[in-house]
Length: 160
Image (cartoon, rainbow, N blue to C red; front, top):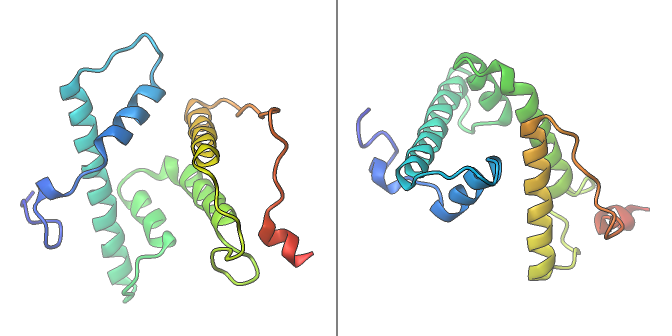
């Protein structure tokens, strides 16, 4: 692969946040398993390469349809073409969940009147989402937290 395959950047410029990736790697493994640094770097490089591969194929699918913007359907088709069809259902479910969590159903955009989370709330929400993702990856039903009642979405409250 040519080092300039990524538009306007060398391959070395394209990466993922190392600390975040290391945390994800460690959270996916049993606590007694250690991962060598060079193995972590290899896994991160594999993730970057996978993203490049799916992005490139998505662009090809998009181009064949004479489109200029890659849509989620193009990514799903690219996964199928690349032989990752078994993941399409999970990817689509994650996409639908993302839409539910981030979109205002009335305006089709992010909710403007939502109060901002404190840093502690954001960290707790991130940990909850990591736990759900781990549970999905491991095929385990996510546990429901009973420490805090679910909050009503302010976007939905405004529509009532």
